[in-house]
Length: 340
Image 1 (cartoon, rainbow, N blue to C red):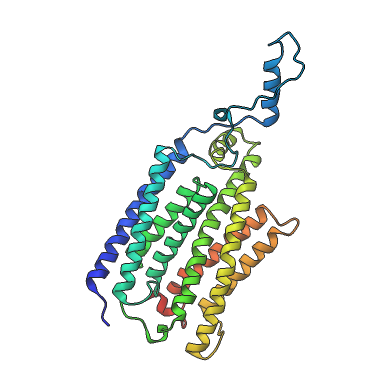
Image 2 (image 1 turned 45 degrees about the horizontal axis):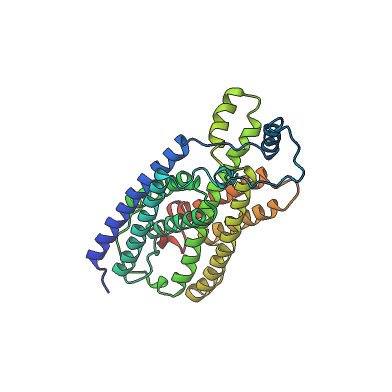
């Protein structure tokens, strides 16, 4: 069945529109992150001390049975890890742009699939579009569950760059599948890879922020550097929170990546008569799995958790990017169709 040119054109227009919306959202998130004033809550011990001192001398006559007075609701301190900004007007505007761009990109993927009469992730251009969609989806889920609004700029800017490269340098018109790709494993294997890549992208953003947050402690020797680093880091939650969220997203994405490798091996046996042939794409998928497995192991190993494990996680994402893009551009093998 030939591709539907009208739907293909609509899909391209929707992809460009979602890229523009994501760009505006990234700028809005960056503005909120950089310029919104933050209030630092006083430590609990200081608050108790101030409350005690405020009552000294206020009443001379003793009170036999003091009645505890609950603190006013309006005076309750915000949660210390609630995020960089609350859902104020400009914050809601940034989130709204992201949700709108997400909906437009979903429509672009659907129309691309309808135009090609197949799943819309059969080549590198389509894979990047789908992977960025899952990355934004993962970020929005964290927004709703963990209020991690500080992630907005740090996820959306890489997404915009990836979509910009996809729609310019890596763009591929809608075309029929190669014979070897006519299998239901295309939907299963590649979808698992797409979902895991989105999770790994959010993990990388959280890991990078964790490493940057840790610079506050190491900047004490340089007051000038400390002022700059602390000003930015003050808009982030604590390093422990960032590390925990990075570990949770990694633990979500890693099993799906494992399944993608297993499903790919089964598909390879059906298509080429062997489960594993050390094709460049297979090799780098396995290297990526090894590095992320080492990261998970390092997080539970004394002396390797924290910064060292975070560096391993960044190395794993570098292997992932080379597997998804570098192998297609500079490598050759049975998976060469991914770049066509």
